[in-house]
Image (cartoon, rainbow, N blue to C red; front, side, top):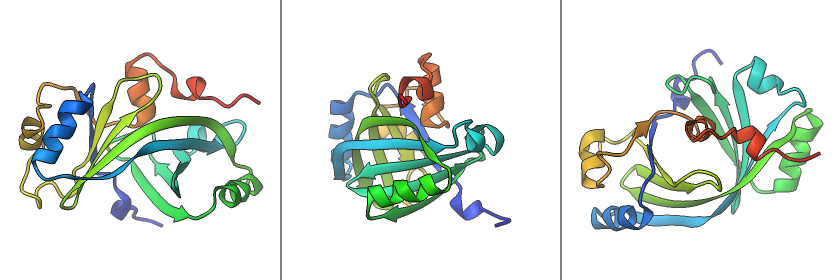
Length: 187
């Protein structure tokens, strides 16, 4: 796999959002709610965190009704980050598969998510236990849908909010919280 460009992440995160106001504005522009539930997010690695520390990869299994497996590549560099995702149907078998490869849970967290779609764009409002709500906007089709980041933020009333390109673990760092220590599984 020489070129993973097709797996490039195209997203921004808007911090400290007012969920009620944001939902009203998303619905006003025609976005449709497609998900509203609590997800369980499990991070996998070897005991000494070989993939994260030596390979700069993060492996995550998310149970959100269906089971989504994601490998984040270039984890420490959000602007170069890529992800490969696939879905499975059974959590136990998925976890057993990774266990047999020497990958076991190193963290686990339950986080709520409310998702909206507008055309080809996705909007995910996430809430982790230790940080304020944030909005993840998939920007891959933003121009195709007739927006710029700036115009969309203004329409949503978020033009004054902090906008970042970083992973959830780094967002936790902004609030002086170590994601892996906070959500670490006790042996």
